[in-house]
Amino acid sequence: MGDPFSVAQRLSKLPPYLFAEIDRMKQEAIRRGMDIINLGIGDPDLPTPPHIVKRMQEASADPRHHQYPSYEGMLSFRQAVADWYDKRFGVALDPETEVLSLIGSKEGIGHLPLAFVDSGDIVLVPDPGYPVYQAGTVLADGIPYFMPLTRERAFLPDLEAIPSEVLKKARILFLNYPNNPTAAVAPRAFFVEAVAFARKHQLILCHDAAYSEMAYDGYLPESILAVEGAKDVAIEYHSLSKTYNMTGWRIGFAVGCRKVLSGLGRIKTNLDSGVFQAVQEAAITALSGPQECIEAMRAVYRERRDTLVDGLSALGFAVEKPKATFYVWISVPKGQTSASFASALLSDVGIVMTPGTGFGQHGEGYIRAALTVDVSRIKEAVERIAASNLTPQ
Ligand SMILES: *Cc1c(COP(=O)(O)O)cnc(C)c1O
Image (cartoon, rainbow, N blue to C red; front, side, top):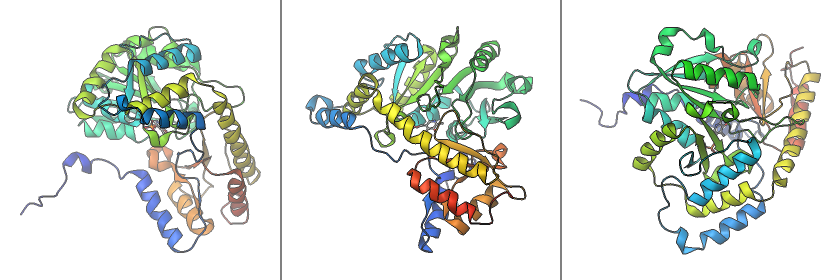
């Protein structure tokens, strides 16, 4: 009497996708007639810069772009990526072998374990972390090993604390700086350590740099590929999504170690057929055109960040001003858990934030705010919290 629609076991090993659950709670609050301030989701609220949209409009009318694109991306796109990398990070890349287009970096992250992980192999995953590192691992029948990110260690994993039995079976090490959800940044010394560690233990090092351009106060994140010898073991993921407000367009790229990219490319050749060429043309314009839009984006988030962090600090919350990303990682008041505080914020004052535990067990005690609403709404959120009994004092 088997159920013909029972899903495969690997699906039941996945935690419920975090944002689906938040959305359910939010819909319920809206039904109750609440005015919701949504600081829950990391999706830029501002539009794609007009010069990028215009290039897309032109390119989409060109019949040459209406057929299947190449799997690895147009050479002109990969060249634009290599030029940007050289200019931005001082890292030289061969566009033919060291750049791969992705249908958003989430796609490339999620698919990577399929290329390198056999059943029972281990993947080292930050906790708390972007959920896709774990999901991609589980979908490849791999086993995630969670590396705690704690405030005491500035949200950098303690690589030396990973047991040797784990390292023997480990294939991939995922890192992400500037970090989602903690908003932490990594000093160059940590990248040097991580590259040496990956070389020593024969790990594929995957650095997710989705927030490399979203940084403030003169801080500019580096590429892990700038570390000597990194390209022998490491790839780096980038995305146009956050930098140019292009989450809906689905384009990103991976760069670095050619053997890793070639493995990932083989999975992709069998599962997808590349990125719409008009989108690649628009991405070329984004990467090689005027970059003032990035400075404008930083100014918007900086003002929102200061409004939220200064406001919450004044109310007694333990919260640091992030140097990068559009997230603020807030300690919940004593006596609350991440989940209880998230529910109370939503039901008492109509504010959506993401409980830290949605990103892993070590997210307990924290809540994540995304700076993706207008500064006037952030002010209002602070006022609502100030007038509630949800403050730490
Ligand atoms: C938003 C995000 C991404 C991916 O975005 P895409 O739109 O798939 O390119 C990747 N990593 C992290 C940590 C993110 O927050």
